[in-house]
Length: 333
Image (tube, rainbow, N blue to C red; front, side, top):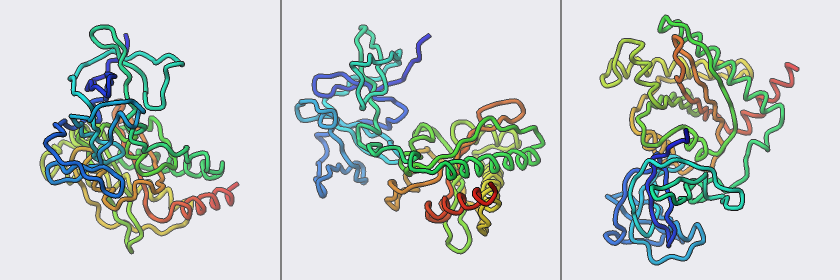
């Protein structure tokens, strides 16, 4: 059975296109709002918030009349507006691969509409140009890649052990991964920006940065359920904050073990909101293009899979952290 995608179908110029609804917040008529040109960037003021505005036809190289509608989307942890020529409607449509000759850097595949027509499924980060730079992972040395994996393995292992003791259930590691990416790329990899998630931010004493832990999907509610509390009240949020504190400390211990860095965490802060809004607040400093270490783990708790969390240490300049890790791995070799 083919995969079905919940999509918003729009017209760009004369071409019907599909936008994944996992990125879409809402739509509005452009004619009701004034478009501003700020330093060469188009912006629209929507409900008191200035949003960058991208004309999708221009980005795709299509001729089009003046756009009449806009779609507010979350991309890379930020809200932005896409200008299109018509809103057609939402549909659950089967996915099909694009033929090689029809492939495009702006599409992730195609959908089949009710009449049997083919709709390109737009890759929104590519359309707005967030990921135009080449992959950064290729700039890591083999030793640095090995060091990042070692931190992820140590942190995940210690997190599983500590969490098992806390909830009195068996906790196993399903997988862990570590990579070096731009902050905007990391946020786009976390999950749907519209799903409710929990973020635990732990400052490091002495103004030495912070570590950010994100529980995505239904992991926050499931963890609270295991602890006999609800995420909707203060007791549940306190428990989730403590779980986040334990998991963050496990990863920090992994970094300390390899580098000797002294990391003293301050009390953690918990926020529960739409994933996109949580990440937008993290990027209020405008550092979406900075490099971050991104570690993701998935745990199996009591035989049930899918407890996912992500660890992003922002404790020092990335090159300094990588240099310390590489030095530690070299000394151990």
